[in-house]
Length: 262
Ligand SMILES: NC(=O)c1ccc[n+]([C@@H]2O[C@H](COP(=O)([O-])OP(=O)(O)OC[C@H]3O[C@@H](n4cnc5c(N)ncnc54)[C@H](O)[C@@H]3O)[C@@H](O)[C@H]2O)c1
Image (cartoon, rainbow, N blue to C red; front, side, top):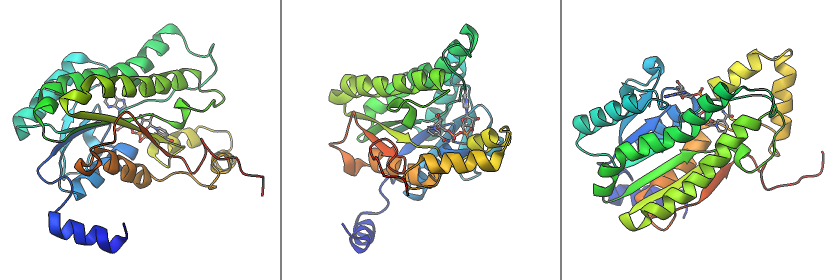
């Protein structure tokens, strides 16, 4: 479909997500903020759930919530439902990084990261489930990672968490298919967000580290948060009704391509 056809379709049908309500966890920064903006531009009402809402766009309703805390999540999801009267879309995007090999992190750190990156998805989605079941076009999209499918050095715990996000995405898609709830995920490559900015700032030579990260991706640059948001928009759109239990890689070709050195 060409751009003109998309524009014509939009004029005929209105914004893709008109009337729908979307929760975006981690929506106050980086990839989550870009997803929230993309969904908002297509007519969705946005509820950002974040442990730090200070950076949230003022166009969105923002609720303080820590996805690693069940009571906090339950209260925030209840507040979203109270405010908007419905929940149609859940974007499970909040996540934290972890560096090092298998010996680098103690049990408490393993438990903390898995609780945020993996169990957080179960907490938020299960709290929203009664509302998703009532939606005419329910969709969940999880932010996984290139680390779900590709062995990266010094990312043992983080990769374990994101591999679990992939497995969980498929299992959720199977469980909820017949309830009309689609579940998909995106696998971003290294994306230009405040998170990666912090990583670069802590490197001995930030410029060299950025150059190395750029070079690791076949297209030679970091992924933009807006590029990830475009894939998420596709996955949650009611027009994607036959797409569930699947993944979109937004990684400049990193997972699938093998180019010869320039
Ligand atoms: N940046 C990348 O290169 C990259 C690549 C692949 C996947 N990802 C994934 O994308 C997601 C977003 O990453 P980002 O780069 O935008 O990071 P970011 O640090 O810019 O934003 C993450 C947001 O999540 C929030 N958050 C963190 N822990 C939370 C918790 N316990 N409860 C509620 N909110 C919490 C933070 O406050 C922040 O607003 C993460 O799941 C990350 O694993 C990032």
